[in-house]
Image (cartoon, rainbow over all chains, first blue to last red; front, side):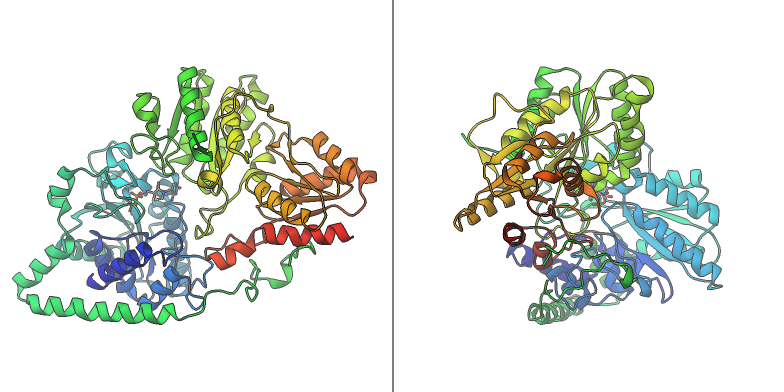
Length: 319
Length: 321
Ligand SMILES: Cc1ncc(C[n+]2csc(CCOP(=O)(O)OP(=O)(O)O)c2C)c(N)n1
């Protein structure tokens, strides 16, 4: 959680300094939920995080270097400068790289799970993460229904952070709670307060275990608040003070720290030390990546096909 | 006063809302927020109930526009990025595009597509979709390259009784400025001669018009006079103006920002080759983006799509042939 937060903050700083091409999207306020998903997945599982899942990605096993290289456009990163920021993954490690089109990755997770079942690999789960805005897509409906029909071990985690860009949740759905949709699809629903780490860990463990043990798709609605703009270009002036002052507006990191202190797992010195350690780790990684080569367009392999011999070449006027 | 391409789009929508009670705007974050690019800034305030925030449901957004059009309304749909219109593709090409042909009931909707590449935007926020939509019968596809055209063509798009795909280029949003809004304009379907010349015709549209103009300027220093044709709309495509230009210059280079297979440039070359072969002093050429998704990193992006640099190289080669 702390590493995710610190890394996000570093990207925001680099963005403000003009050192990142394109947008920067933070998971501020969503780390407890995100990490509860990422850390409870196992090797062999499938994970399709979204834009606010830095913490979960790291917990799932992404390295700080992979994240930094993608954001900084290093040629050595997993996306080689071809794609950037949150659009990264390692498909062969079960880490599905998102495309922008919201809702599209849920069915991809379904496909991976179906294939694993066909190959006789049981006891795996796939987690797909979306925001409440993406529940308005046709893709959401089609893929949740598909998972239910096939009884796939999908855990669909919806971070209901109250806003999709500027649009309030009341303009996305008219039901009382998103979790109310679950029975209509024939899947099990769970709800959780998304800024409470202890709750998130327990509820996500329950959902992930249920899916792993043959309980079919699990739908989790986490209620929280986005504590940042949609991206770093956005001041989120549309989020009211009332929202920010509500219990949902409490920072999950603060809540987690209180929970640790109360449980006697760590004292505040330890927490401070963790933060210091990850600040160093992040600074080192960024310093390293800043010295790495950017992609060279003249060395670039302009081929979109795996079947190289089928790639067309066009116009001799191209250089 | 100075007005940008983006402001012209906002002003055209304000004017359409003011002039015609049948017009309404529907799109994600277009209401109080004023749209991801602020193309609808303050319009929700000024026209209460007529600038409506949509859920993230592109298929249903277009479908709803078609239904409203059947009821006599003139909806303008804003896609947050052109790339997301693929999610509404079915409704555009199968509902909107076929309605009039099947039923004689027209479908006057406008779908605004913030299109084209900008640095660092990557494969899913950079696409140019004009060729895809132009392929389908029943659609008008506009690709304005100037502030004046952004304004007057959007107003015309609203007035046209057919579905219009309005490809507005994000790169031009802030880069282009004009002194004032136009009071008259060429009709849709007419290309414009953006610069006259006699040695080579560069046929372009949208942001590529400006790359072509920069090339014409650069090559004028080498003694070449390059004519630049701005197609303005790619469907209908003004073959007459293109052919007249090639008749003057004898050489054709068609330039487009989207991918090389098929598309607008292929259409231009095919028409000139089949209808004006004897006008040509050299084989007609075309220049497009590379045949890969649009890369995120600026180093790759600037080489992926045509730029003044690559267009100038192609033009020199063609002038010498
Ligand atoms: C199909 C599609 N339409 C529009 C967009 C543009 N868009 C990007 S993020 C976003 C809001 C997403 O809100 P939500 O799903 O609630 O996730 P959050 O950002 O709140 O985490 C929108 C509209 C998109 N990415 N995909």
